[in-house]
Image (cartoon, rainbow, N blue to C red):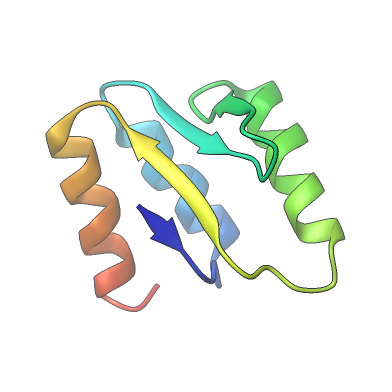
Length: 78
């Protein structure tokens, strides 16, 4: 799923902690970072937020309930 803006980074990280399966961030180059890993969260998100603008972020949740949880999180405007 494509995400275009993350307003509440702390809330997003807390959401990731509730996910049961693997959740990956896919870079523009096609690299995949496991967002369940705290180190990957730090590396991946710090790289994204160091850029002037975030046009879109691709997130892949391997478990359907995790994908629904992430979708609802952004649908609720967080």
